[in-house]
Length: 274
Image 1: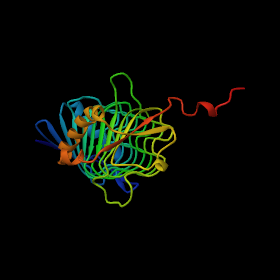
Image 2 (image 1 turned 60 degrees about the vertical axis):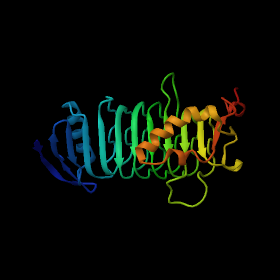
Image 3 (image 1 turned 45 degrees about the horizontal axis):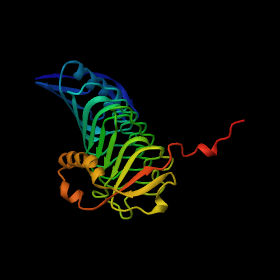
Image 4 (image 1 turned 180 degrees about the vertical axis):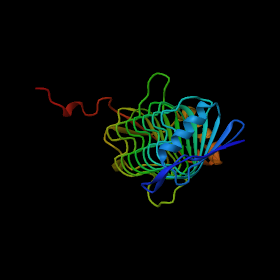
């Protein structure tokens, strides 16, 4: 086991410009992010992965942003303890990131591959432009979740939110799968806010239970998920249930509503060429 620490200079934005305390035990590195500026936390994560570790534990996280950004490698797992800051796993291409706590906005921004598992709640604009991989959230999420998600060939992004979502979920979706369960929520009211699927022109949204037509964008058709849908959705929900210790049979005990676009060019008639 080795230990390193290096103090740089004074505080900035409530954090200290210091190298985090790092310990290594075999293929696992533990990084103490307490009061450490995000730049040095991420430098330590990258250094650990470059040194060949397979598991990075980041403890005492309190809003440090950009964790996991741009990282590659399917054999790398990052375990985060605390509240992860903005743009977690942006542009990520392979690793698994598990958050033992909550996450702020922008999780999975333009993510290409990998898995993000959040054992708490998350903020707004999750999975913006997400191109692949999976993002699972145990609890509630905010506004504009899953907007501009897209798929290409074998890359099909999947996001499952176990709680409830606010307005504009799935806005301008072009591909992939967005699932809202409404099971692990601290809020009253419907599973989702208004304008779900507004501008949607690809992909599919599944909601556990029913949704009112006024909540749904005019670009979407509302259907009941059938047996074929469950063949696709079932494996995703089983993986989700295993991650968060939930009962798969309970999850599927309520019929799912399916939202799909009824036009691949929803605003085509609104544009004028001169």
